[in-house]
Amino acid sequence: GDLFDSPRPLNRMTEFAYAELLRLTHADIPVIVLAGNHETPKQKTIGHVFALLETLQEQPRSSEIKKGTMIPVYTGTYEQFTYGDIVFHCVPHCEDQEHFETELQKISVHPGKKNIGLFHAGVRGVKEFREAEFNEQLLSDTFLNTVPFDYCALGHLHRMIEVQKNVWYAGSTERLSFGEASQKKGFLMIDTEKNTVTPQYIPTRVMTEASIDAAGLAAHEAYTAIEQKIG
Image 1 (cartoon, rainbow, N blue to C red):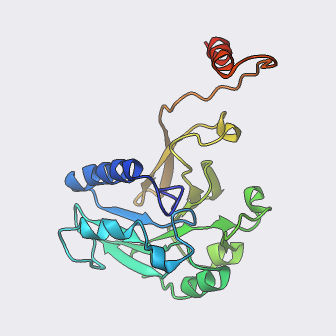
Image 2 (cartoon, one colour):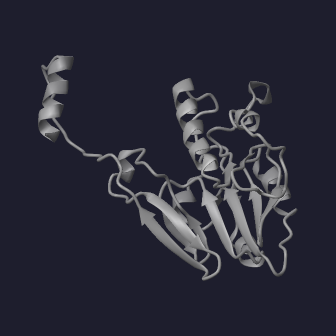
């Protein structure tokens, strides 16, 4: 979730993001993209930026995932997809908590297969969600402990954290605020055969904090002082 920070991202950002997603599908890597609260419009008349992904698909939408397909999940409903012996249970951002919980109740795992949950939500009891963000939806410990998922991939939190042994936030791949300056960024490699989760860290742009005394400085002088401060 939150591939974009707004339901109306700049054309340049949209083009770049979709070009990178197409790089994956052209390499025969299937992709599932869940909508988050940031890119989901409050007004349905605006339309969803993920709908553009539908027009890029050469194959009709199917519950059977094939190599090179990209599946955007953004209509606020539970959807299920199968790839070999893996079943993906997907619930994107919904219009409110009640709707979100209704969609969660539709989930039914498949015995004998690997069941993966994909959700854009916070988790009750995790300190980062004690002060709820506007329009944020939450999963409960009861849900996570009751439904026998082999793994749950969560979106919404920028920091990579392990909620439970098989429940993780991969976090963002870029630092988005000074609160994340010290955080490592990357992605997670999940081995469904060995039931292992391995963080893979990647280099990102350096974020540095610096202070200057800007009293009496013109704007260009302040910028110069900042550049000199950070080297």
